[in-house]
Length: 281
Image 1 (cartoon, one colour):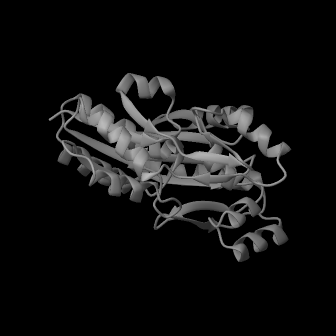
Image 2: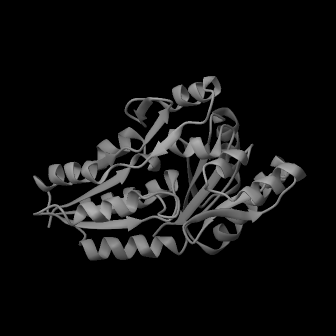
């Protein structure tokens, strides 16, 4: 069986990785007033954040339509027997459900949707793992088993400069955002049961960085090999420096640098920093 891998743009997997492992990508979109842009295709991340500064109101985000999935599945069906479709958390987007619906509409292709229950490059880790295994000729069932196994060790924590973006977008409750603003805390957030929720309330950015580092250290003591990613929203130099500091401290952790792109950046705002990881085989 010839197996393809598809993910959506919010995985923010590097173009060279998608090309290397032949990972298909379906974009989500952001809309400023009447102009809609497909992220990673029509607008770069830097262009997006510049537009946010100039815009009178926050952009809106939209998932791929079922028809978009049908089109790309039909394209995949020309050369493949099955596709593993890896998507951002069903708790913050209907993308996974759209993939499921489209999978029932395409003949000649077995569609295996996978809810990563997370987003950004941590979601991308699932797509890369699936693509590498497919390249090695591993069966669909074995790949899906591995993805579910990865969930057991996958962690991601992030902090944002301004909780109001998450509150206005409905990704975090208004009450939670108000408390954070009033107390001037830097709450650590994470995904729990597919939704974004506060993990801990921390007073300063410095302490938030340290807490994320300590959480990684707990797993680094237990696991032989970990793959981790530092994720930022237009804070590349800061993120790069932090990643280099972490890389010196953790000999058994393989680090990379990624970013919060337009769709996720709409809800987090500029200035966010995150750290995610999973246990490698």
